[in-house]
Length: 146
Image (cartoon, rainbow, N blue to C red; front, side, top):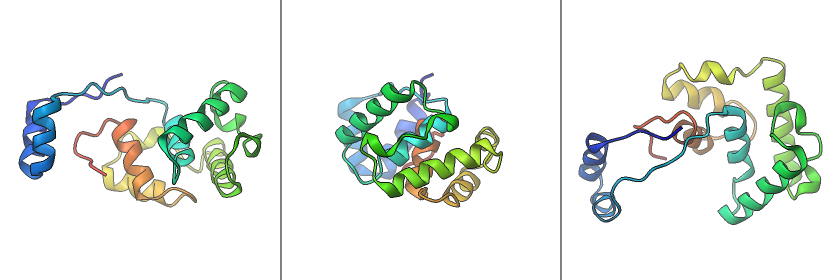
């Protein structure tokens, strides 16, 4: 799946921020793939908090190599992959909440941005930035700029 946007959205961003407008003028339209699996996207963003993108990709690659697909039921051995103890706790709690139905990620697809941010921010280890990353890169919301 690809994030869909057009001239209307690029014009709005260009008018809203002069620096963004100059960048859009130079770069043009960017094709950006979406991650439709909400659990994987949220997990990926928690893994990437406060580390470089290169480190995030390395740790995520290890996670996928060890677990195959990252699912709530596959998150038992995270500490040995290079994640700190706090992130392991956050991811395991997230996995429990999804597995037990306390967090219905599918229901978030039908909610307004502010509600998605509120629900996700109630999870340990998930703040506004992480919720906005999910809105942008998984739910494809065109009007979110973190």
